[in-house]
Structures are given as C-alpha cells and as structure tokens.
Image (cartoon, rainbow, N blue to C red):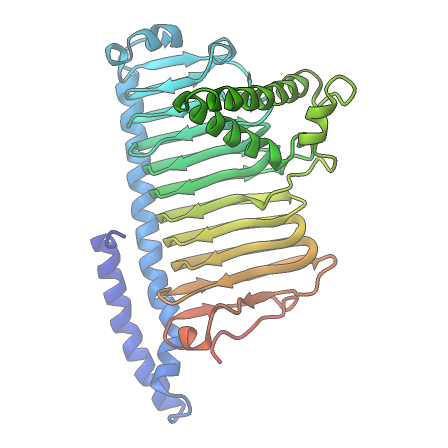
Length: 447
C-alpha cells in the first residue's frame, strides 16, 4: 500500500497533538478513573477521522479537475462516429466519439486511447459484449441513456493499468455486474443508477484513488434465468477446447466431442434467454436441466457495492436498495482494503439466506459516517458485521441509524464482531462505533 498523502499526514499529526492535550485534561477530570490506554483507545478513531476527511477532500478535488481537463481537450475538435475511431484509434485520440446500439451490435466497444465516449441512444448488448476501457484519460458519458445486457455480462469494464477514468450520468440495466473497476487509478463514478444486476452494481478491485458519488443501486435482478452452473460451464468449455487443441489423437477427438456437447448446451441456453427470457424446457430439455434457475434470484453470494484489495476510496451520497440473492447478501462489502471513507450511505432492503448491511472484512483505516440501514431480511442478519484480523487499524463508524425492522426474521441483530476478531486484536487497535441507534444491539469491541 502507498503512504497517505502529505496533507493527510499533517492533519493527523495536528489532531493527534490536540487530542493528547484533551486526554491529559480528561485524566485529571476523571481523577484517574480510566487508564491512558483506555482513553487513547476510545479517542483514536477521531484522530484518524480528520485524516480520512482531509484525504477524501483532496481526492474529490483532484478527480474533478481531471474530468474538466478531459472535457476541455475533447471539445477542441468535432465528434466522430465510433466506426471512424475504431479504424484508427491513435489518429482520433482525445476526441469526442459517439457510440450507440449499432456499434454494440457488432461486438464489444473499446476505448483504446484517451477519448470521450458519448452514448447517443439506449443500448441492449448481447452475451459477452461490454464497454471496455483499456486506456487512460477516458470519459464515458452515458448522456442519460441506458446500457443493458440481454443475458449476462459486465456492462463497463475498466481494465488494469488505466488511470484518469470518468463514468457518468446514465442508467445501467440488466447485467451480471454493472461496473467492474479492476486495477485502475484515479477514477470518478458519478450520477449513475444501476438496476437488475445479478452479482453486483459496482466492484472496485486492486484500485486506488476512486471517487463514487451520487450513485444509486436500485436492486438486484429478480429474473436471473441461469444458475451459477452456467458460468462454471463457460469455464469448463474454455478448458476443454484448450486441452483439445494441445492433445493428440485419439484423446483430442474425445475432448472435442465433449467441448462440442457443452457448447451446444450453452448456445441453446443463451439463444432461448435472448429470445424468450428463459430456457425453453420443451425445445431444449438438456439445457433446461443443466442451467435453469427456478428461483429467478442469483444463487451465488452477492451484493451491490464491493471494494476489494483497494485503497483511498471515497463513497458518498450513495444508496443501495433491494439487494436480493438466494445465497448470502452483503449490501456493501469492504474487503482487504485501506483508507476507505463512506459518507452519507443508505442501505435498504437486503434479502438473502444471510442478509448483512455493511461488512468490513480485514479492512484498515475505514471511516463510515452517516450510515442508515432499513429492512434486512434473512435467516441471519447484521446491520454491521466485522471480520477483522491482525493487521487491521483504525475503524470509525457513526452515526448509525436504522428504521423499521432491521431484520424481519433473524437470529442476530446489530453490530456484530466476528469470532475471527480476537479480543487481543481489538485491545491493540483503534476501533469505535459511535452514536449507535437504540434499535440496534451493539456489541462492545473493547473487552
């Protein structure tokens, strides 16, 4: 992980000094009723909070300046059609490029140079088609239009090694994952609505300096026609075809026959879903038996917002609603990440075998401010769940509020510390939960 930015460090040191004085006064007033360790432990998250906020403000300003520079450069020349750009990407680098349904009908749309893509109409993609961001300094302006997929696909994929990316202003419809940001730096995701995703609305992996603002995840799909076995079949097909290409006779013939049989099942399933929204049991009984999802909810663990193995991520003014899966549903998952700030987040309506609002899994330097949770529905439910192991540092949560029933049918309600989180770990780390609503059963993290 990279070091925090200098202004953040300075802010942290300044607040540390001030709070040190406060602690001394506090000890005098309490006449030594608490130990210095206890006082530091209870106040340390606030020391980190100033640093979080400072870095969040720096990230916000920097990313917005980057967006303005992209637009200024692109507006110097008239826009061109995607077909023109695709024929010679380097010749049209930095320009405005119009993209539409006809372009996606020909296959994936790729940003291979610095460019501003402007969506001009609603798009319904076929299977395995996506909008790929493969270069730096790219702005994707959906222009209020909708990007969706007829079957299962990632709508927008920001690839590893890219930087200075903007995704803004539109609706993301049916998909497996609405947006995947994988290994990118300095990314702005703003003013988007995502709905009918089967896996997640937004996944941020191995990325840094990401700003997500005014994004609304409006609900997982309730019409997922294919079980997870379909994805496994795609992987298996690729393996069989690769092995068949490398093998010798007669083994290669057997592998090719197996691959062909698997491909036929997959193609029947995809064709039926694209045409009818489900597999035709009468026409293709084998494909129906192999892949049909009777419950029509995703049968894999899922959620809406996932931040994994990333750092310096700010999520603000965002809401996550109607997260549904027949497996485990984690509305917001922060996993193995550091320096994450979530400000003004609403989580409402989480349904699954296990329904959890906010999950912090081995995360460090996390600040969650103004978190509101409504209606978690599942066999087990937690408003906030920790899975914190050795190495985790300051975590601040508060204020936290809930309304209605937090868990409709649950065995556990409230802020839960996972059993992986040994008391010795918490005793040495700064973790606090502030201003927890009375409807929660808060678990003390300082045994």
